[in-house]
Image (cartoon, rainbow, N blue to C red):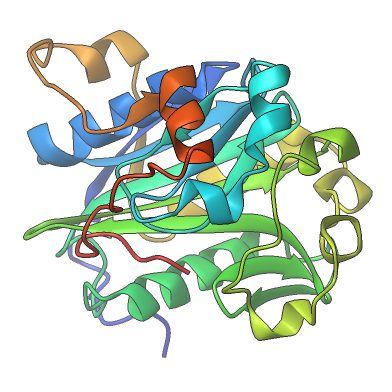
Length: 273
């Protein structure tokens, strides 16, 4: 039995507000997501097609010195963002497509608000999206075609709501991957492969970005009444919100090189991999 099948057909589907953006900076996207998670009671899906400039994004508990090659990052002026959720470290750019679900705990029938349950449900949903486009798998906490990863995930769970966000590699620049170190905690299926052997590009399997985003809307329609919502509506009445997602300054990074990295945030809401 899949999640949501316990909902009787005569019960109205909950509303899912869909916001689409093209090329929004990842910092703006993460600030929006955190605001919607903490200041609204609606269900949201945020789709952002690409971002600029190339940016490293870390989970709330990630240790910079273990995950980022800091000297070339400083030399090339690559921004480093520490987001509000858990999960791993990624570098994102115009070739990345972002999809985020922000939901009330009662939004999906039968879904318990725990990391593995949420991951199972999103894996089922994306299984519909990628049907016919390759051997899609939920491998540990990643989305993969066969044994190669193309989607990394992070989550945050609050008292009444949860967020699950994914960075999908429609394409990627091999050079950008060199800014990241191989994590000490890696999924077993990675088998010590470097980034280029471990990752694949979605454009090798899916005809177009629009096919992908249309598939998301269709799959959401099995669980929700999907309503397209303008970004301005999503931003309204929350101008006083102060997000926890921050950009690390060059001085922060210099201090880390000097072995002055402060203690990482306590693990709680997030789900580090």
